[in-house]
Length: 251
Image (cartoon, rainbow, N blue to C red; front, side, top):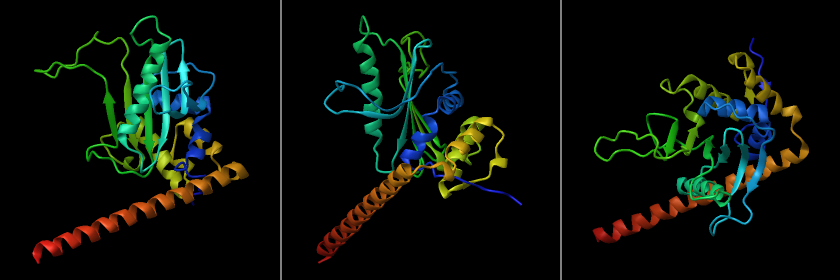
């Protein structure tokens, strides 16, 4: 008989931060997604640049800087209503911020941001992972050109509900599956062999969620429901207005 562990769903931002603010889990996740073993002592929550870069302030859910390898990695829990342009702005803001402390106009370190969507559908039918990089290519041959930029910045969009996609590399797929499995509040630990997942499930175990965290989960749930109602009302209004125009055009 399969014994399921009761966990808090990682669809909630407060739980996502609780899990991946642990340096062990943050570095394990990053290692599998970008192939870099970070050397960090802490993961900052709600990282903000002061003063802000540009006219719109940004705040990163999880932020870590590996000074030895000159790499900054940010992990963001994304909501269904978030736009991709917003995340590009986040990425560019972080890149520009690094130049402030640079002696010239060159980027002093690599900036990589990973955005996790737990419910939003991927815009690509081929994969649950989309990469937006800054790799220069030849106009005619589309060949990637090395040694143009010293640091290779990158955005990675991860849609965890596509975890069963067979073409997705196994290390990515396992993390996507673990996150997606948590959404119904229970997971089968025996389905995983990576030790990082056992630590993940321990951290988000239902009995270890504090009253403050539960309150924030309820707030998130209510906010999401309100946003969904507003979205549906907008769709319905659009259909009615569109139908009215059709009627007028036929008359």
